[in-house]
Image 1 (tube, helix red, strand yellow):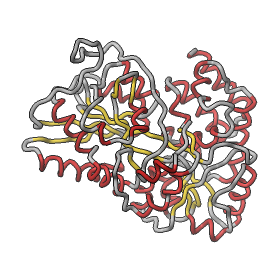
Image 2 (cartoon, rainbow, N blue to C red; image 1 turned 180 degrees about the vertical axis):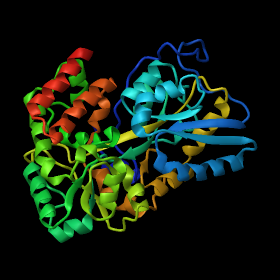
Image 3 (cartoon, rainbow, N blue to C red; image 1 turned 90 degrees about the vertical axis):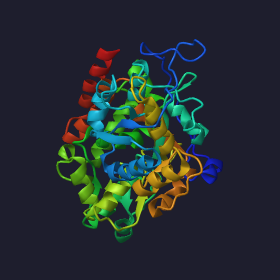
Image 4 (cartoon, helix red, strand yellow; image 1 turned 30 degrees about the vertical axis):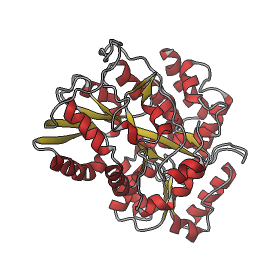
Length: 428
């Protein structure tokens, strides 16, 4: 796990500490690189023209990418970029099948963790080491897109997967926005509930978004920093006392969630928060632009559900993700690589960041967005790298995260843990 250093925060507002290295082999789809070494080759060069399919899951960013596409096309005669957008959960589950062969996804994004590993092993990536694009990134954040000595992808986004908070509702309720321990967090929720609002809006019916709370709940409960990797390897178990304690804390959250929380999709959860009916939205900073688009005018802060007794070492959670890549099977690699180069230029990355209210890993970006500036203190805190993306097997990840959802639905922590562990054991 990494700490965001003051030096990096000063050097680049959006820079965070060192990302986790997602080590994996080049895989059966590897090509022969220059010099005869087996492995991914750099994208082919040539005229920047023709059609480029850009596959990703950020539907809320479509308009921003559309504007960047216009600017890119203005620089190159005859080039066209078309977005192919899936939901985050569908993209996580089906992205490899969609992009393999490059019928779509000449350029694409991947999630950190299991998806990056799967794309790597399938030989989907072209090599971006030494590219014009890679040179624009904060070096410590490039590791999330590396495999061995290869720079296969470029982690574009830096986000905080922590509950967003309506600061006005907190002030009205007299609630502590930075509780130091679990008792303090529950007391904060109690004050919010007493003031007549829903303390936490949680999209439990959306696996991709509902699972983000897990990053916070597990950070200070786990005995090691690579807890999810060790669960997957069988070294730790969902039936361990520390994991059961975490599930018990999920159970304590039930009175403070909206009705039918486990059946709530992300859009209704966002609406509750945007309309001032819920004090927190338990997704992350990546939804800042979405809630502003829904009319939220209030100041927004981030809250870390600190599950410790005050002795926990982490003050929050972050993630480096949306890993940009060029498809090794693309018939238009020159234009695809040029599109990634374009997105990675500080001016264009800055436009993306400020319009979407997300920090980026690109160096020398100027942030003008008021929300990004307000949240800048989080760049200086000791934050845990989002644990749910340590899982390399999506079946295991979904089973482990589903144990929390089951507890919210009324299953006992012990039963939920046993059900999850059974699936983990089957995959060992």
